[in-house]
Length: 260
Image: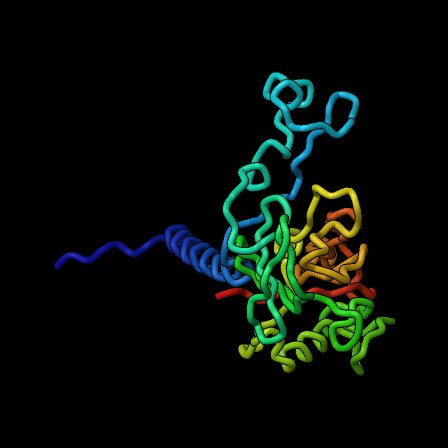
C-alpha cells in the first residue's frame, strides 16, 4: 500500500497562503460590488478644450488632435461628445430622471430638457443610482451640516444629534421617493464625484436644474482616508474635486441608494 508523502512545512504554508489570498480577494470583491454603482460611470461634463494660450475653444483636431498644440484633451472623448440617446435629461452626457416624493417620474420640459417641477430625488440613468435632492426647509434642508458617522461635532441640523448616522436613519424612516428598504446611505467618493459637472464655469459644479439647493462646499462620502482613519473623504462642489476632512467636522450630506 502506497501513501502520499507528507507536505513539507513550506508546502503547507504555501497552500495556506494561497487559501488566505483567495478568501481575501473574494471578500474584497464582495465589498467592491456592494459599494460600486450598479450601472456605468458618468463622464465629466467637459465639452470644451483649451488652446496654447489657455483660452477656451472648440475641440477641433488642429488644437486638440494627436498632433495639435494641446493634444488629447478630455473634451474630445466620452459620452459628453458622443451625443447619446437619453432616458431622461441633463447636460452633456449626463442622463437624469427627476422623481417626486412618491418615486414617480416628473415630466421634462424644454430643450435641453429640464424638470417641470422641483424633484425630491433624481435617478441617474447611467450609474443607476438614486440621489436625494435638498430642500429649503425640513429634514433635507440644504443648510444642515453633519459630523461623519456617529461622531459628534459642532454641526447644526434639525435633528437632536447631527451625525450622518442619525440623518441616514431619519431619511430611511421617511420613506423618501417610495424607498421602503431602508437603504439610503452615504455615497462612496467615486459615486459622489460622478455627479460633478466639470464643464460649467459657475458653481456649484453640478447640474442645478436637477440638483437645486446644492452648496458650493464640502459633502461627506462613506470612504475613510487610509493614512489617517480619523479622517474621511469629502467632495468639494466648488471645484468638483475630492479631499479629506476630520470626521468631527461639519459638512453637507447627499445620500444615495442603488436603483433597481
